[in-house]
Length: 97
Image (cartoon, rainbow, N blue to C red; front, side):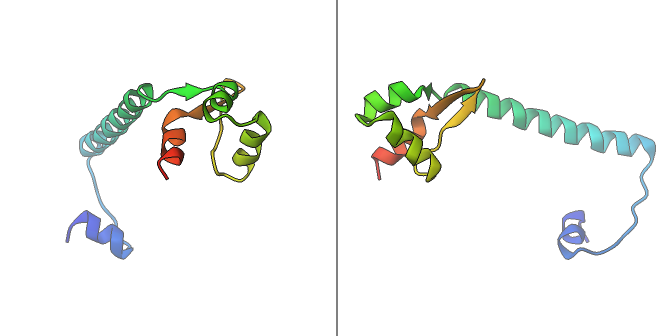
C-alpha cells in the first residue's frame, strides 16, 4: 500500500524513520515549498495592479461604484501596503464576461 493510499483511507499507522530519512523528507518538502513560492512570485510579477483612480478612469465609473463592487465581491480590491489595488487580469476577466 502506498503512503498516498494510507493517507486517503485515514488508516492509523506508525511509521519508523531514521533521522537521516526524516531529514531527507523534510529537505524535499522544504525544497518543493520553496519552489512553489518562487513560482508564485514569478507569476505574480507578471500581474499588474492598478489604483482605484486608474480603474475608475479605465471603466468610466465612479470610485463609489468600485467600492460597492468590492463589497459585493464583483470586482475585488486588494490591500497592498495599506493601499487599495485592483488586478488588471480581474478587470479583463469582467470585461470578457
